[in-house]
Amino acid sequence: VIDYGMSGLHNESEGTGGTKPFCAPETGNGCNSAADIDSYKWVANRKENDMWSFGLMFFTMVTLRKCVFYKKDYPTGFFDAKGYVSAAYIDTVAHEPLRSLFRRTLCPDETRLTAREFLDEINQINQEMQ
Image 1 (spheres, helix red, strand yellow):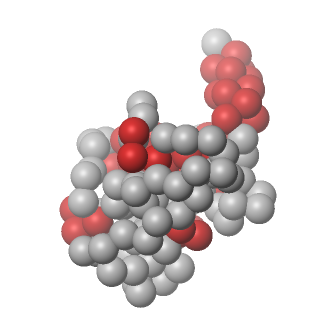
Image 2 (cartoon, rainbow, N blue to C red):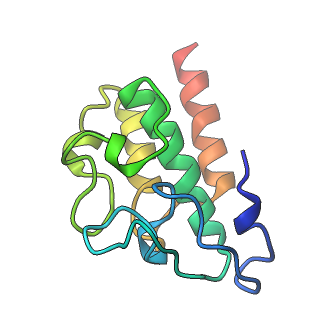
């Protein structure tokens, strides 16, 4: 899964702003209440933004059981005012290890899981379920 508009060197090159609603809230292009849905802010490519996008896509498929392409297609209240997935929706995931994984992926970028950490946790969850 890749969005070539956001491809580039971590924290060095700029992308197009990303594909809404999959932009991390800190980019200013996400689903926060103040974001302009018709324009993009050019931001530096960051690994943390990729993890947000991946986590949101995965979370959406798990919780809504479908792919969603536009902010308007998400249920009301799915995103909070800052553009993060609301705690109420994260709490709908019954499996605690998976719920914890989403909490730590769909969070502010300072504490967001890396791709390696995400993969390690998915592998651990898979082993525990066998």
